[in-house]
Amino acid sequence: MTEHSKDVPSLLARQTLLDRDLVRPVTSRPVTRLLPWLDIVVIGGGAIVDRGRDAILPLVDELRGAFGDHRMLILTGAGIRARHAIGVGLDLGLPTGALSELAATEAEQNGHLLAALLAADGVSYVPHGTVARQLAGHLAAAPAVVSNGYPPYGSHEFPAVVGKLPVHRTDAGAVLLADAFGAQRLIFVKDVDGPGGRVPATTPDLPVDRLACELLPTAKHVREFRVVNGLTRGALTDALADKETGTVVHA
Image (cartoon, rainbow, N blue to C red; front, side, top):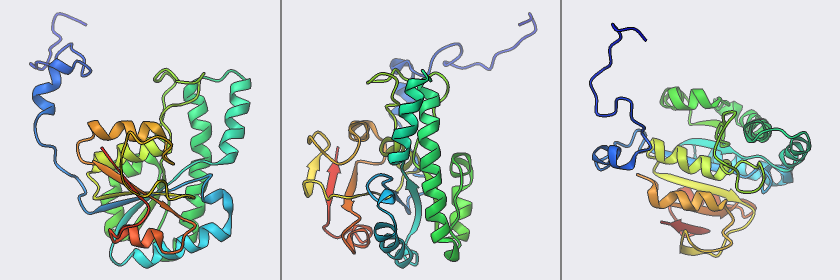
């Protein structure tokens, strides 16, 4: 830095955005929903994709049947192959960020698979950067976009809860994305319904990552999400139509 260097006058100059007192005047203001018409559907990797064609193809038919009435971001999760890759990574002493990238690779492969099955409808797989910057444009040209829900990690991230395992996985990533875009629906497609009805996020043994539930109370837009059994024909269709099905988890 030289004596001629200049700063932009700001209360945030040389401060941290993690200072709650500093950012409170901003966080108290209303937040604009970027895509209030967006439906986000999360297809479980281990719960659905790993089961093969008998689980995937009926869901593809349901998704295709909903395209006329909904514009969707379809997110895929990682499955059993990711667990194997993470196990090898742990044996090699890889850091949390590297382990996350290994798991995200399988989630991405699952996304390419699902996008290929929906390609005839104009659906394609796009990476995280495209979702962040060009999702609206893609959905203006196609009824849906597929990406993976595994949030990107850097080389140094939050301390892991168990060893080096990433704490932010597909379910948490989906909640973060849905809240960032102000989506109107967030639906998790698992292989169980959960307890059923409306339950608070503090309910134990929900079929989603606990961190996804912990994010709800501080979210700006997403105050609830639904969990449905993707092995039950019509459950996803009913969820998109706001019919009573599965479990609604609320803040």
